[in-house]
Length: 357
Image 1 (cartoon, one colour):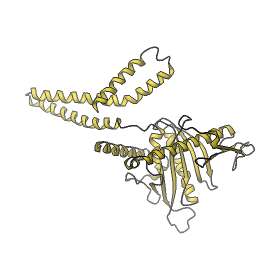
Image 2 (cartoon, rainbow, N blue to C red):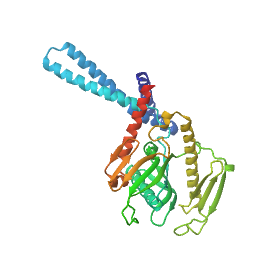
Image 3 (cartoon, rainbow, N blue to C red):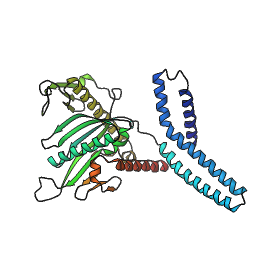
Image 4 (cartoon, helix red, strand yellow):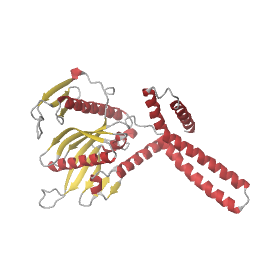
């Protein structure tokens, strides 16, 4: 590990030297690549430098203990030695985490698909609430949210909704949300006060560029039509809605959120690319070991990951045995504590597996 850290330190210093050269700024592409690499290496280099300093502090304290006869100075050296040892232990763990292989999709934007499952209208209402939860969370991260496709019901619920979240590191955090979300509460239409259980499914897919997914025009059928549902001026009076049918996968995309047929077509293709890319990622995952599939955030999409219990005001994440009694805040977008716990559990699992190997 430390040989690799030394190599990364040398590479970081080399990048910093290159960035100081006048001609680098004139080459936009090279400048961006170097800045990206420098940004990726900076946390590792900072932790490694702190580690080396802590090691030096420990050696200095040990030397002082050997040389010093004054009892007061020896006590001071012992305190500094203990502090240095504690720092070294913490930094070693931090460095192991920083050196874990990164998901190549972590920095990508994401497309989130929410679908109502068991529970009829109640599930559709819950789907709309979870959609708003993610919108509020994205806003707190200063990310942009754009609706791609939505099927609403008349009472304010959503049978399904697809939306894009654009922002640095969006996939690295939201990927832990894929799975079945369950709600337990008394519906407003329930006259006898019985608690009902409903479910929705959430799929988080990294945005796929055209270079990530090649789509043959022969495999696509494009239909245009008038938008349906409640619409403003022009929406329901022009052939602005677009439906894509991808024959090999059977995926059908319908987009009508924009007045422009071209914009709806672009959104539909973005969603299709993301779904095809996600299918390929799932195939790769299925071909890998059980250990890989059991990682937090990469599990089976049919897995029940979380329960939102309204009578008790609690939210439980079943993967990491975390229960929080702040349902209202979570539904208002305060999900960072859950995501941080998922990230920590995932890192701990991967570290444990690495140590076993």
